[in-house]
Length: 154
Image (cartoon, rainbow, N blue to C red):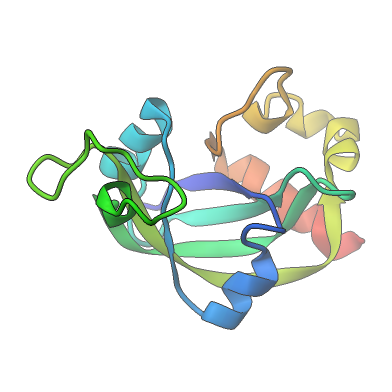
């Protein structure tokens, strides 16, 4: 049984188009312990992803993806030339984890945050809560299916 997640990315750093072009990517650089724990322990191959663009004009879900590799140590943490090194992490004692994902479907239109907020079935989505800054959040299958249904109707 797969789980469902929402992964956030700023499109100027890594967009869904980048993912489509790459085919598969390492979801690296997460430096939050709660999200790290999900990457290490909970996010598994076959899990479904809503891909969210943040910090842009149209904030919201732009497509779906799937996890193709379970969590493994994030090697960018011990690379001092990476965008997000952590000198406390090492190959022998990794702190941070990542998964590999691949795109499934790019939506024709962004399912914006305001559109999601207007939908009564999505009021409990973590991403819509005030103050939520997590780069990955769990979603229910119902929320996932509802967002995909909204996207298909736009």
